Image 1 (cartoon, rainbow, N blue to C red):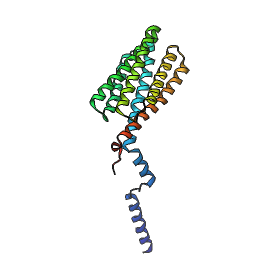
Image 2: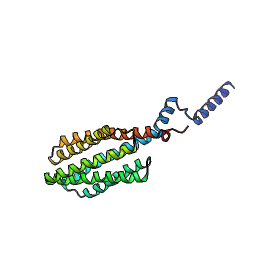
Image 3: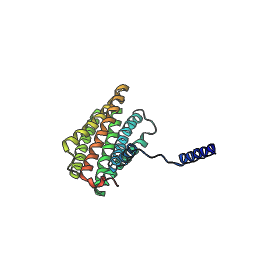
Image 4: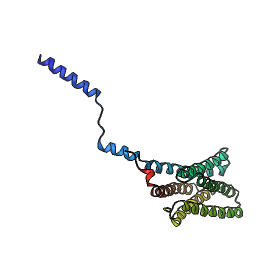
Length: 217
């Protein structure tokens, strides 16, 4: 009888153990909550879009430098990325602001493709003119962004955009001159720096619209 009772107890314990669901720890709950906050989701999306921009410009340089058949496809994809970034920012401002930013970002992408083609042909005079247009486009972009959000410091944001353009130029110079280690270094630097720019934009938006980033209970 005693053995029978012990056996039944073991069976019951086994059944309970099989049906029981593990209780998540406080740490796992905290991590799940942290990874699901509206602010973090927005930051990751902003990083993804700008990281795509850095990767697409580099891919375009690689293809354009040797005339690969995907060059025009990549140019169109760069334009789409410009629209995607503008569309994300428009979510916080307006369709009109998004349209203006789309024009500015697409212009940057178009001028950059022109610069790549001119560098490939060693057209230095034309290249200088495009660089001037890129600088003007950058100033207009920064001025418009800062008119939307007072939390974006114009001087700081301008410095980040200028650094971004400098990295693009370094990549282009290295790629055209077939300096492969230099090209890789410039691309790595561009990828790291673009995340700083993305975070700067995200933090400014969070400060301007704190109510948009309150996690639901």
